[in-house]
Amino acid sequence: MVVLSTRPKSPPHTPLTEVAARLGLATDADTVVTGLTLSTQRVQPGDLYAALPGTRAHGADFATDAVASGAVAILTDETGRAAASAAGVPVLVVPEPRAVLGALAAFLYGDPGRALTLMAVTGTQGKTTTTRLLEAGLEQAGIPAAVVGTVGTRIAGEDVKTALTTPEAPDLQALFAVMREQGVRGCTLEVSSHALVLGRVDGVVFDVAAFANLGRDHLDFHADVEEYFAAKASLFTPLRARLGLTNVDDPYGRRLLTIAGIPMRTFSPSGEPADWRAVDVVLEPEGSRFTVVTPAGDRIPARVPVAGAFNVANGLCAIALAAEAGFDPAVVAAGIAEGPGVPGRLERVDAGQDFLAVVDYAHKPDALEAALAAIRPLTTGRVLLVVGAGGDRDTGKRPLMGEIGARLADVLVVTDDNPRSEDPAAIRAAILAGAEGPAEVVEVGGRDAAIRYAVGLAGPGDTVLVAGKGHETGQEIAGETHPFDDRVELRLAIEEAR
Image (cartoon, rainbow, N blue to C red):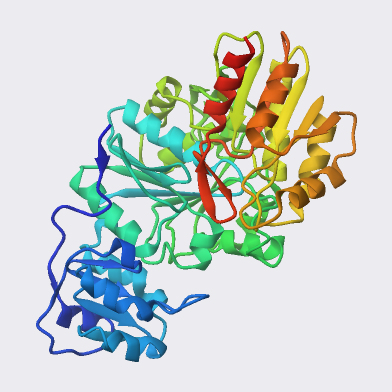
């Protein structure tokens, strides 16, 4: 497997005098800049290092490290001026350096986004599936594509290692430059509420932005759901997108229509009146078939290779988004039908067992309810659910996860997710506090032991659903990330039980 660089091979060489002028500053330093980063660990020779204030330290405190790695100049605020100046390279000072990063990075890399058709997806559920389906649809149709999101970044079929759902603004513009070098035509991004609030997509104007849905999430970051919605809605303004697409089956999607500052198109997975509709839906174990009705009334056969009614919504969104961006919807629909599934999204694990084994990323209430609803029609026996909740995150969702599991599963095995700095037993107790329902409820702390417990109970016709971590390959415990993959552990448990 080829892993592409996160930086372009041939970046523009920009005199620091031009960079300063762009910021309304002046310098006589004879320096050339070839990149921009805000992380000392990602500095490359020729970089402008952005030293930002942080919660624990100021980035300027690490300016000497950045220069040692090749930084040729430093961008910071007044607070960081003294420490940055001590590093011995030119220093540019602006009131809010984070606010200028996106536009400055676009300038330094030659505005690479202009060479791409840029499509965004925001929402609580389905961002990863929608963007991955769209990327697969374009690639299968022979259209060079890229995707940036939770599972990582792919450019023209090759993987790129990225950490955040939406990378920081300088990293995102660098990725756009790599895409331009690789001949990419269409790029789809997951745009999180964090990205919108923290300016990670500043300097980007999407050709089309889609709103999938809104439920409870990130309330450790936002004060309440209304603030969360406002962050999502900020994508649908002229500074961020030229055209919007919204799911009118979702109440927040309908609200968005009344406040969006750009032209909007609509889609309805349930076939209600909208510009784009899904009709004749047939749910199957390996995916779903449906017909797309276009704004012109044309009918396009479609299939998504991921089970669940909610993935019809994701597939329809992907097809409509591509079409509104200028791609042929029939070609994209055919490509999606032939493409692969999405890692960690209702991903089946088959090891010769006589029951269904599935891994899903559902780590919030709405997503867990949707995943359980998706597998129930595929199950003739019992649904055995293994689930936990992440530490250092929204604590209010924990009893909700327990309530949903106890109501919709037959056996609920409460275990650890990524406890992070919290006491795992306390997290489990919060889930168990809400677990009142018809299901048999069991607490098994170790996640590997919990998976083996559920597999040991499973019989013909049952389904074991391991929810919460999906594609993740590590478990965060007390400041350390330990290797752990639900798909690997589930397969091992099945093989050991045979």
